Image (cartoon, rainbow, N blue to C red):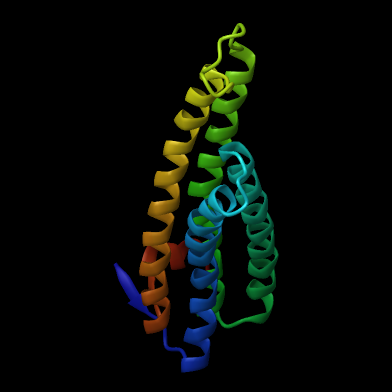
Length: 168
């Protein structure tokens, strides 16, 4: 059940900031940034995904420290939405771990000298794509969740069970 917390317009804007950063991470960094690295700078898929994960990790670390600061300094609504945004990063972190495990498995399996016509490893390419698909879906789900949470933050709303889990 969604509850409404009495908050000023400024507090609701501050609560939205957490989800704006989360959504920017999902859309601008992963989708547009990854495609830009591949198409504009002609990098490989592995390097593009690795760089977007590194940039995203920096944003996750910032969100972690910002949430700790919000707990002690900001109004309750703002803290709850920073905490919610931090919790939502678990989806992306899980996808990152899965991506690295699958691509590492491709390195362990090896290709026994088998390569495609353009010289890339067939096994490596397959494993990269197997790791990329769940990552792509995690980014899409994150974008949808972030935009929905941004709407709720703008209205001063939060899930009741979440608010009970993180009391003031």
